[in-house]
Amino acid sequence: MIAIPGITSAQFAWPKPEYNVAAEGVYTEDPFIIEYRRKFFGVFRGDFAAFEKGYAEVSEMVRKNPKDARALVWVGNGQTIKAGLLRLQRKEKEALELLTKSRGTLDRAVSLRPDDPNIYMMRAATLYIQGQYFDGGQLPNSVWERLRDDCEKFIAFVGPERMKQVSIHVRGEAYGELGIAYKRLGEKAKAIAAFERVIELNPNTTYSERAKREIDGLKS
Image (cartoon, rainbow, N blue to C red; front, side):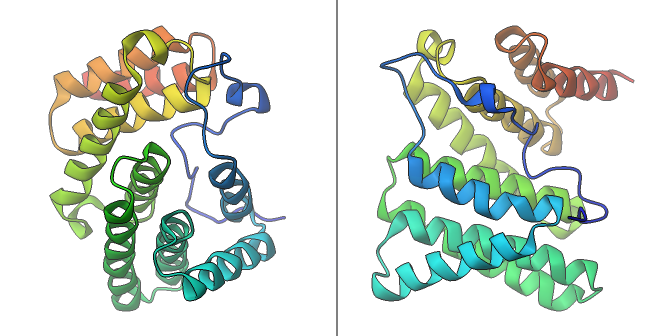
């Protein structure tokens, strides 16, 4: 497989298998979300076939049931990925149009299940991906405001004590993407605080390594 040039990752840090283990009885991700993240995010390592198959599956689910929020949020994610691929082909206008459509799809998914963290955190992850593909000037501030709000809502939902018990992946992405949102909004102190929380909760991991790089960049 060949990785997509110019794209480092679909996530704050690429999770190792052991990073998905949570303490029993605390928040765990919906297996549906995990399944399609595996299918979709393989595209960032060049597995286009798995992505296209997964995208076709969730698109068919939504065709059959337009109110299937779990499938709809992945359609929105797929639209973002397709927009990024259009940009790599230098089709900027089409890419930006599809990116806008993606955000509408994501918002519809969340509106169907507004209190389901699996749905609004997949919206957050997708908005983060948009920032990986497109320059800051090509995205409205509302992208970063929504990413910030989704992450903060999730952190409040889980609670400070349970955040120590959820998987490394979940807590790393929540605080890592929150830090990115604050960084993009120009709130440097809050961004650093979020990245410091990543380091505190996930020492000696790829999450803490990325967070340290982010802090160094903000302080330089």
